[in-house]
Image: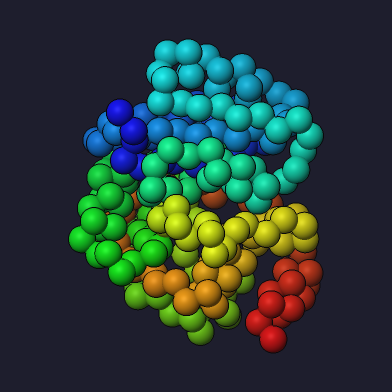
Length: 226
């Protein structure tokens, strides 16, 4: 039976968290899902971990890049490989809560005009302890333009597969500086796609402190807002 929704997980050297992320998808209250994992030429144990999980649950599908192509390319590869019409994005160290798939499927079923949905989420630390909860509001273009990071939590975002015909994830500098999710949201808005918030907590975002080149990020953002 074809899945009703697909999780897409790009991963590079994610052995510390990938099994937890996949398991959270498999534990969805709606079992009619698939989990498409795209390994971007990892050098750690990621592939072995995913292969073992795929052996015990055929809902897990592993795709391997022969060279490192970047997170955006991995996301695009995963999207093309999905078997459903509803695609849920998830980073390899984040968690899908049990009601995410069912709430997402319901939102699209009841709102035919909506292209992209997003939800509330919890912020967790490296050990999985909840640090905060982030609420959502109706989509705000001005806020998206001004925010340093993506206005919408990427691991809460889902869209119809038809969206991919209009918008894809951008590689290169946007991916290198980890704002490819922000660029996707900008491109989707500029393409006239409709966003809708789901006022439920459906995901957990793992906050791991990383150094960021803020000046370069600002330059990249300004380049596509002019």
